[in-house]
Image (cartoon, rainbow, N blue to C red; front, top):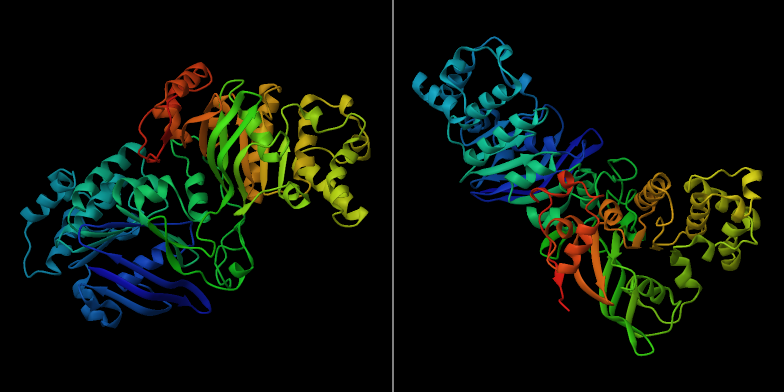
Length: 570
């Protein structure tokens, strides 16, 4: 067993690793993921005792022995024997003036009194190389072949622990798959630490996952659970950033850059749900939904919760027992045909239709009468922007109105804020444009003004009711991209009401399907689109088939494991 306790590594005044606690049992593969500079490779080198500089503190116990207390001779006897490492840079890992076979023999003979050419050839065959490759020098081998030689050297003495540092980096897709299949077999029954930025590799090889940020562990747990339902804001950002083939929404990214040495939570300066304690106190790893998460708020927080919401118009039930949760920084798409209750749901949340039964919670607080506090945190973009932008107001007046009503700042500060959100909406702020009336603008410009107006108060929740249905495809794409960019920078929660499941696919994290006022299916967007269970959902997807590329929407879900789905048949 490998047990790491309180591991800290510093170089000068810079702390590279801070308080690392991890365990790896026999047969486990633990993947460490995170951005460049997080400390992933430093962790691997610390275990091996190969750091060229810096101070290392804590405990690294391998089968009961503390590696940090061993001298260099003792470590040398363990390296390549009980523990081995496949390095990230294969060019540096192999001696350019020795044949591949000789290097494997050397790896064996260092730890045993004798080795044989037969044993070397057996290792070459085990990693998928022909015996003739034994005579090749590194420069005569391809990248994939060099990687296989490195793996053969790591396996030469049947180590208990193997550390893999980016073992498939820079390999083409076909070679990468060959190496993955090789590693799946080679790691069986061993302890393995996989260091990678490649989330798909972690998903294929590791049964457990740890997320490292600026030297601290942010989240630890079952790989499939973490990748399908991240609990920490940083983990969610990593998953969204990865260009996975099967994910519906990706490449959103994380605002800002990693910085070492911050007080408090190391992620707080980039986190959109931070509170004051995040700036001063380091969060502890605590259990959240079946995994360990270091977050003062218990992971990604629910922003909007709707419980048993029912609304009737006379004897007609427009909504019946609707339950949904929207998390901070998430886009939840509510899809369904006209008359399914989508707009009624959004207006009920906003308090713009008659009261029904049920409860609505905003940031954990029950919503009663909609007051200034509510509307400063929740805004709505209407399907028809003329519903929210008066034809009697200029562009500047329309965006200033909510700031004036809420009396936010001085008149000069309000104008500055209005111009700021207009820029965010990618609109000009010159005097000529600010003086225009809605009838002098294009449909796309009016909708952008409506978005700027909705963002003026810096809301946490944006309800977007068919925000692009009346726009041409080019303008539609720009509006949707704008909303995603604002979500990335501000942590906006977006409740997207749409009949267009193709649009929902591109921008939403999860989908709720409404039929006759009831939720009939709910789940991750990619899961719903590929494995819809309800006939109505299947019909919606088929109706959008011309806009959904089968090559992108189909295929395996390996890179985004399925999440639980609610199905109610009517």
